Image 1 (cartoon, rainbow, N blue to C red):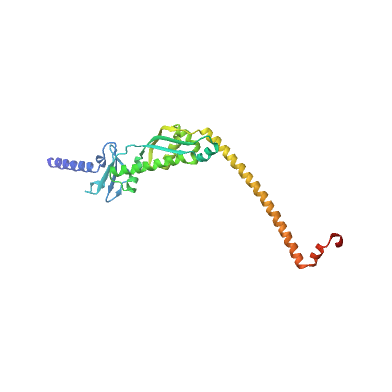
Image 2: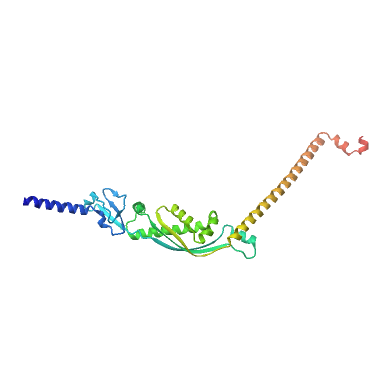
Length: 265
């Protein structure tokens, strides 16, 4: 009986040790996420998180498994940008009176990586340390900043720019999340902004478009008149050419044409 209890106790210790070794969450600090790689099974598709139970049997194989822990803290970036409304310089010149349609603003944006994409990002970009993840997130923030500036400068978004500079950034947020599917919790807060006169801009844009349309109509009308004149000239030349061929073939006609009208009769 004593021998049986000793054997049972040893088995319990071995089982507990195996359970402990096979529980990878112990390698992940609270609040962080882990990426599990093994020599036998490659990279595990699911991220590890402290407090969530998972038992991996191949972690029992010595030196088979490595676990990289990462903190997915939000990334925040300050941004400032300036520009001119689409074709604003042309409309300003058309309006005169030292009008300009320039704009500028300062803002901050923030985002965080999706935890369920951590494993694929770590695998794709060969990320093993927090420092490498931080560099990746900074590069991602650079791309988001460039996207925001392009978005604000795009002629297609000229009508949205007024609301964005006023602080309504919902459309910008939706576009950013669509453009960068690896991020979540994106927000952009406008701190300061200098507005152009949007009402005057729209009026000048409409007047300029009407002016261009009138110029185009005038040019088309002039081209039609010129084309008509060229057609008449070509017809006259063709007629003279036929006369020339006729006189060459029948030179006596030339004598007839030079006779006085009364004599010809």
